[in-house]
Length: 381
Image 1 (tube, rainbow, N blue to C red):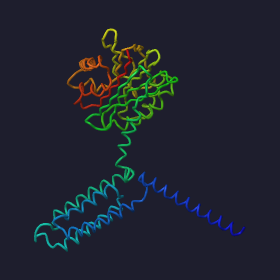
Image 2: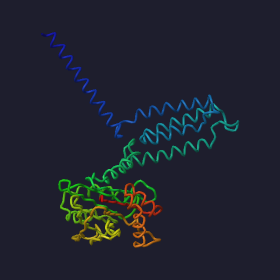
Image 3: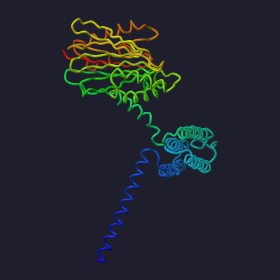
Image 4: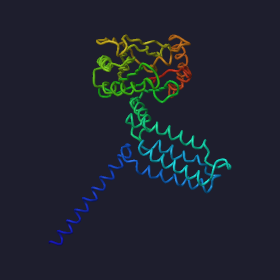
């Protein structure tokens, strides 16, 4: 019995030790992924490259230039913290000294350490240190910093995804930021509410454009996504207005248009906060009609009222929601821009609007230096 108990005790200790090792490895892996772990491994790898480059320059100077030491410096600027980066720089400086002594004065011929080489390596190190210090000052994780903006862009894209619609309904959505950037001050939030029988869509245009409006758009898209569906339809814009007022931003206003569509009957309400009217194509007449609701800008004053306009999407009808960047510019007024949009949209009526949103932005406002968004909802004939 005693022998068996000892074996069980040893197995239990082994299991506990193995569990502790697994937990430590898992924590290290998570820290590494988040950028919170140690940069010792990266520093050791880069330090080993310095003598390798130095030896290569001495043995094969015609193939490996003394300026090759900028490679670990650039890599270190992306991977290391400022304190570790200084250690790498000291090693690179020692490598340059060794190369200078081994190859001789630069006046003896090419493939030697020249003053220009020293200046290039020093300049790369200086800018690399500035980048590393900036990341450390703003608190951006040292490995994840390069992907943070990508993550933010993907969050906006996911939040702007429209929910699936029942048979007979289709939607098209396209966003084009100003200047070809990845971030936009225009965003969409949408949800199926009322047991999936109602589609609610909010298209918002934040003041500013491109990167200037991107941070506010990200914050508002998350807040608006939480409000949408949590409040009655007529309560959404007043709540959004109150949220903007509480932020107390210097440039904190926005325009929004809120569509509440009954997917069974096709009846809808539009509520607007200083936004452009929607455009509806009546399949029976073939004419486009403006659907304009009344309401002030979001974030201007408290107690604002938003009066809805009602309509209905019958089989074959089309509804377009868009931001001002699509139809307004210094070269043309709003009426001209909307006429051009409807004229281009008429080309898609016979064949359908599949993939039309992106092509309409290209045709109507390709080179406009403003954020552009277009949402198209269609009902099968």
